[in-house]
Image (cartoon, rainbow, N blue to C red):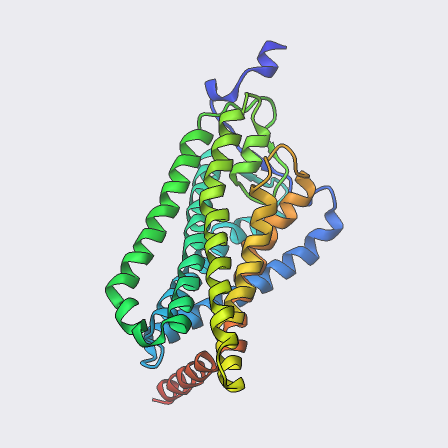
Length: 318
């Protein structure tokens, strides 16, 4: 009995088994097709946003600098998880090495923390643009934008570092079976056979900083924005102001609502079955929808995409 329950931390660490939907094999083929199509769309959509934001001279404002970083984050987000999920769905083993699992949740939480801060920065940018339009160029200068982006990436890395340092110390006993599609910290905490109070508490504190605080700042910013927009006399001006903000609000909702469900409550309390599908939602569905949300609601981006397509056609004819 002692050998069966001995911590795997003291032995050679073996592969983790990712359950996914192996208990429902009839769902594997439809899920494989949906994930593959979503991944291709996410790649095409986010690469397009990055290209037009970098190459089009009309999209050089701070908003599009932040948007290009958001698209890069979403591109990395999906690439961190989806190829491995697709491989496991098509394989009978459905495993991932301990090292691979550690790298996966380290990058995943780095990107997640960074995206929380980027979305808050984008809300700040919209606040300055609408509430302080005459001082916008003076306040949101390129140097400040670069500093804000650097802070976002470094903060996300700090989040990942704290989570990884605590999680790699957890002992895992018996069969290392993760009831998830990929490795992330809440699923790893559930798998440990040790007291995870420190991990649960740390996760709650980190979540409060990276999810609740940015969300509160976003809501506060949009409260001021709504008040400023309602003061605009022109209905056309109000419509344009709301149009520039609505896309960001939709993206914020798609990102934060699943994150709040997964991370605000302790990992030991929410359903693993529901949790793994919500993880799948914010790791693939949200990054896939984001570029289309910004494209469909933004005339500048649509115009830049048309100009990019024209340039590509001209190059192809040469």
